[in-house]
Every structure is written in C-alpha cells, then in structure tokens.
Length: 159
Image (cartoon, rainbow, N blue to C red):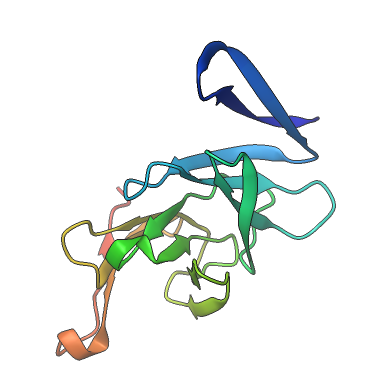
C-alpha cells in the first residue's frame, strides 16, 4: 500500500502535488512556531522507522529522526521545547525519544513506561515539561531534575 503526502500549490487552491512513499502515514503535525514545518510519522514496510520533517514552502524533507520503533501502532510525535528546537516522540519499545531539530541527533531515550508510548505532548507554557501516555495505563509528566525535588509519579488512567 502506497502512502501519499499531499501539498497544495501555494497559490492554487485546486492543484495538489503528491509525494509517494512506501510507508503508511500515521501522523502529521504542523509546527505552531513557523507554520511551514511538518512532522510525518510513517509505519515502515521493511525498513527502520524514521520520522520525516518536511518544509512545506520548499516541498522537501529537511530532517530525519530515527531510533524510535513504530510498526503496529499509531505513535504521536511533536515539535517541542523552547522555540520548538526539539522533536519528541513515543515508541513501541516503551521509551520516549528526544531529538535536536538542528541536526537530527538523538538527545535522549527516556524509560519509565512498561508498554507502547503512543502519545506525547510538550507543555506550551513551560518548555522544560512534557507528558507521555502509554498503553500501560499511565501518563507521565516529565521535567528537568534540577527543577524538582522528587521524580514525577505516574498517574494511572486505567479503569
């Protein structure tokens, strides 16, 4: 099954351009900072999972983020941190991944969940805090260890 990333021509509302990939697109997220950066998560067919960052104005991939796992589930990723300098993602290996946007380098693989981490969200008010949600029934609030006296406790959201 081919997946498509569609870009409307910037000045023509009816014309669409299609970029074909050999993956199943599972998420897209536009940067609230610049409005032209687009994260695209894809489930791979036979190769390693890579999150692509597209430049909508240039209609090209400008960065790739690898390391997290996504094969069976929808995994949500987001731009994050001060001036959205980072990319944050969950993973099927129970970890949370953090990359530097500038060069795509992996900064951290954070453990704490026991099952797939399928959603992450950066705090728009506090650039040092984010949340992750997992199939283990917990939501974890993460932050800088220098800003708190104790580790964050998970909240059990399972009935």
